[in-house]
Amino acid sequence: MPPKGTAPFATFLIIGPVCFFLGVLFALFPYDYHVLWTTPSATPPTLSLNGDPTHADPRMTYFALQENHLKFLHASPPLISRILHIVIGTGLLGFMLKLYKPSEANMLFDGASLVLYMCGITVYIANIVKGLRTVTAGAYGGNALPAGETMHEKIAEGNEGEFIGREDSLRVLAASNTICALVLVGVLVLQAGQWYAQRKETEEMEQMDKVRDEKRATAKAQGSSGGSKKKQ
Image 1: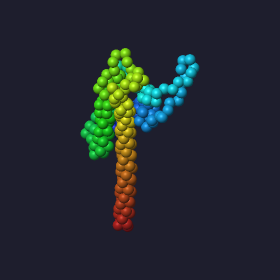
Image 2: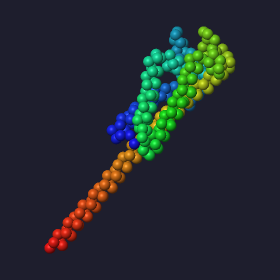
Image 3: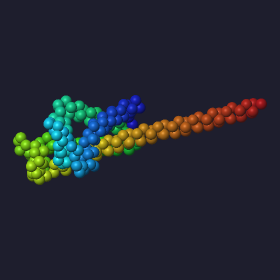
Image 4: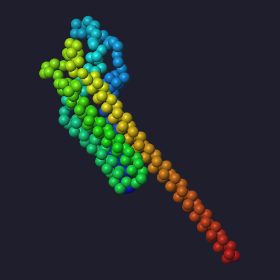
């Protein structure tokens, strides 16, 4: 069992990164929600440069917004990804501290939390990182877009069939974000369950100690009263 003073700090090292990643995924949720659960039948008109209303292709709305956002995200400075990986490592450090000479409760709650955390890392590496690279390269279905062409132009020309899998790839990426969010919520639930279990255990131990002390005090009082009666 880890020393009593290190357990709260280790828990903080776990909860902090988890909440950080949930915040990042929450920022992505407006894009993922429409891609996963909304299929617009029509697109509201937008104004062109000369002020005339224009209607965009429904296929180029939510998917195009998500695609542009992901490209911008993937093109962020290297400092961003380094901070992200440092935060991931901080969470792993917290698990290592809590699982050093673990108790039964640590093995149950922290072990399950670590499994969920590693599942989130696996989804991040296998789906999200790969998906960001695919979106940036435009290599949907294994085919890269020719230089100087965009997927929007292919859709407008009606040739998006050559690059089948664009919408599916974006949906997989959005679903991966949702899976990571659910996994991280599971880590928080397990950590909260561990805190509650430890609190109840402490209360029960204090109650048992109180009852034991009362019994000892009663027995001592009875023994002293019996001794005084014998002297009389």
